[in-house]
Amino acid sequence: MTNPKQRARKIFRDRGGTLRTKEILSAGIHPRTLYAMRDAGELQQHGRGLFRLSNLPPLGEPDLITVAKRIPQAVLCLISALAFHQLTTQVPHRVQIALPRSARYPRLRYPPIEVFRFSEAFDSGIETHLRNC
Image (cartoon, rainbow, N blue to C red):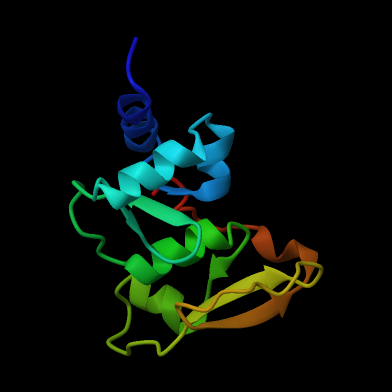
């Protein structure tokens, strides 16, 4: 039988290397194992409740990964979407996201975000690129 850290590493690798605390706990990883791995340097903490395997290559878009994991219903929009698809040279000062009108306002200290509200039909034709990060 594998030890808890080996099992946790496998779960992280199978799910893209970056997980929220909620996902980690629901996968059966004990908080003691999670924090022991973080303290040993096996995991990096990218903000509140977001962990990533340390031995993975650096993230190309760490702010976008953080937003995608912490606000799963968010959709990149405006300058952020153009920059992600390399259709502009402009660098957004905030990650611009679209949310349904009924969604709660996200509480995220970092990265800075700018929220735009759209009707419930806003999700038609959306491409998903960062879901399994």
